[in-house]
Length: 175
Length: 401
Image 1 (cartoon, rainbow over the protein chains, first blue to last red):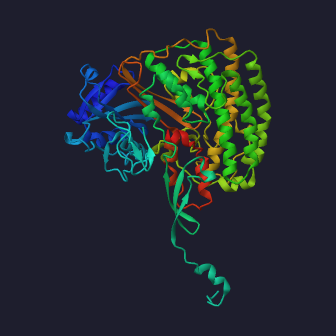
Image 2 (tube, chains in turn orange, purple):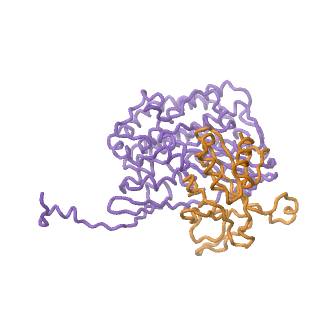
Image 3 (cartoon, rainbow over the protein chains, first blue to last red):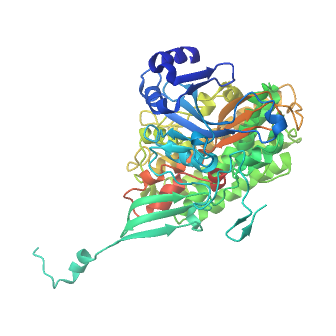
């Protein structure tokens, strides 16, 4: 399934499919951020694919703060957004990944951007809010991108590897 | 009849209502924990519902980045604290998938017994609390009376009554104590007739039916699009249960078990001649159907536990295989979903090759189930909001993680 699908997507979207890893336990396909919404719509609506169920959107941050360990890792610092899809019709699953820079244009504090898929799977609305809240990714075209788990005035995105606990929050001592 | 302003009844038509924002929760008893709903109302009619969550947020995912998978087991207990066993199972299976562990037969059947007992306990609370939401107190007490017995059984097996940490990576922490199976079987025999009482108290109760039938109707398309799962998804007539349709690592536990997915097909639930008939006013996808699916799942779980006890007592092997507390994880990432009582609980584990995961992600079933609320509550009465939210059977510990 996975290899045939990958070839098909490559044929359809060309170099917007930036990579894939088939050796992982759950193979994944990497998509360039601008093409994400198109690829998702294609995956959902094509008759023999019908990925009509979005399980989960996760943000994964890649940054090693320890310089000793950082010298050994085989990746550059980046952020990933991972989409786990399922088709209830055909009972198959797929993992999509979008690789983003940690900061937009490498300006610290500018969140990386990715198109929203809330119009394709309504459940993405809340999941994207959660990823925005905790992992600090901005979803373009999201109806109301607000924090969902942390309070609205919270500073920072806790699941980023360089996140620091606030020392104080409304008179509550942190750390 | 001509309108006469002197008619005292005219005031009925002349009450001007304004739009009003009403806060429901976070301490409202019928919001199942700390859920805050902001209702935009006009008189009694709700035009918009905005859920606000996060009051119980502990960033369990961040905690997972600092502990080894086996140390993380107690934290999964605290996600869905009404079904701790099923949370343990979901996480343990995810880690085992990454480690490529194969469990002995006995451990698998033990897990089925425990997971299905957990499902019964959880659905009993769901049922009792739903009665409470709708203003009937007694079912709650009856439900807790039976759940108490399951907790006693769990206590005998692992020593804890709520946060078990019993099913762990590699199997379970202990084997079941001698005599446990008999006690469990006795309990199931005793529970069966009691379910009839619950049906009389709630399922067929005229007031209950009036409060739940044709309220909060969710179409199958909505249910799938919003990523709902478990009884909420099946209550809308979608034939999907991970125990049958999930990944092999999970479905192999249920290999060879006789059970049918509880969903209405061609107007019938499996074996529905044994249970109270669906009332004529109920519409597929409404609150009543979600409740009914849960009740039938209790019956089904009783049957599965019986089969599992039989297999467990004949199975070879041990209750688990030893896994080191700081077992080194192979590099890679895995995602696995299991059918927890409230829906599909998924865990996503990214490992960089050390014994501590790089990233842990918990996909909560109730989180996705709750995000459909604003669709279901549009245009309903204020009194129906607890009925709708209650029918989703949410646990805030799992939503906020």
